Image 1 (cartoon, rainbow, N blue to C red):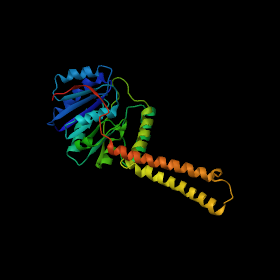
Image 2 (cartoon, one colour; image 1 turned 30 degrees about the vertical axis):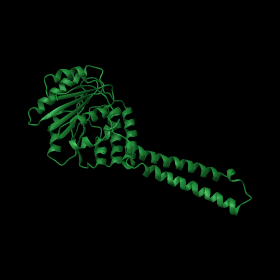
Image 3 (cartoon, helix red, strand yellow; image 1 turned 135 degrees about the vertical axis):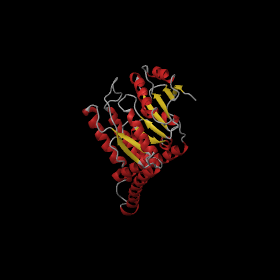
Image 4 (cartoon, rainbow, N blue to C red; image 1 turned 90 degrees about the vertical axis):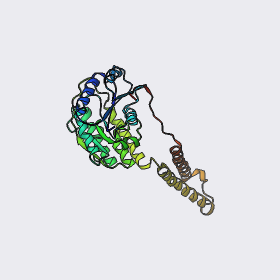
Length: 316
């Protein structure tokens, strides 16, 4: 299989037929062997019914229907797990991503030395206040935090080497940071391509402005994981040790002062240094234990899918 096209969707029944026809009309003219993988993220409209209909006359369609809405990250994760192509292209199902971009993106991976080619919606047809401006701020923060020079981290249309999507592990909300996750795994050849963006033709967007707040919070989490995810003791243990050391120094000072210098002075428990020593030692111990428990969890956890597939369309 040369190419897998992974399309997550949620309540996009009006656009599926048109999208599927457009992709096929473009790719059938090439000699590329491709498969279409639709992941229905718990749609409540006629999305699944339409997928059943179009799959009757097309043998290279695979579709998976989630038990409920798990989010785009889980839909992409399922699509990645099921993909068989040497190159994997992702795109949204709302017709805002242009299917004509699939072949150029595919060639940039297949013929080049790129691990990821990310789309850049340089000219957007979204709300300036609620999408464009927050998106620019979000992408600026993501560039600064990750060191990856991309202008549009959240663009739905991207192309990957198969080895990339098989290696990364997606958790909820992390689809925005797939390039960062890939970089952490050692895939450093990441570039971008300006892609066409179309106005929404059917329905309305499934995302509100709150997604950017969630995106910034996810960015903080990812930055921490990027530095200490594999060795949490390096963060918690270091801070815990430093704070414990502060408490230990205060306790030694109090002991020496009471035993040898100011024997008839106030009781140790009446001095503020005692409470500083007690508090820092307790906090330091908690930090140290958090790092220790993090190491244990990291080494004993078992990877599992965070989604349940209710139905599937498969030709295998």
